[in-house]
Image (tube, rainbow, N blue to C red):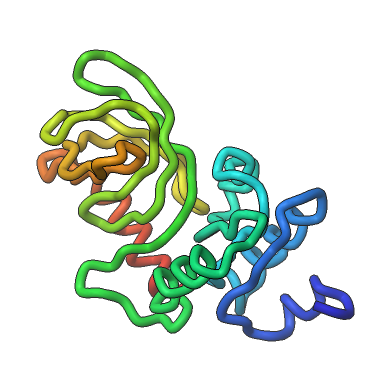
Length: 189
């Protein structure tokens, strides 16, 4: 983007942007998230690992293009997030957002994971940690304007490669309602 980036982000409406993860990224993302017209813009991070992207998780990066860019991986990421950019959602809205998740398994094992998508009913996460379907967990995370929240959940699926799994929030845990409220506010914004 040529010209004064922060001025354009305050004055013009954009559906999405790609931000090179580096020294200038935080100020650009801060401008995006505080802009009245772009606060819900889809942010793609460029470069770095998911671990490095955690430095920017408070800005709600939606997805990351890993370098070196490979066409098949880039197309897969764009296809997976294009409906979010077009503001068209599934019946159960899933918002792609990357943030750090603290997980406590029922055996008191603690580990960190990274969110992939979140909905009012659950989330998909990435972690190299060994976890089994049906295992109860308690997770903790923060999102943009949602302060850190704890909620009980159960593991509902797991990829065979062991790098990703899905959790369903416990319907008896009223703390999950804060997540639903955040998603509703996110979609209205």
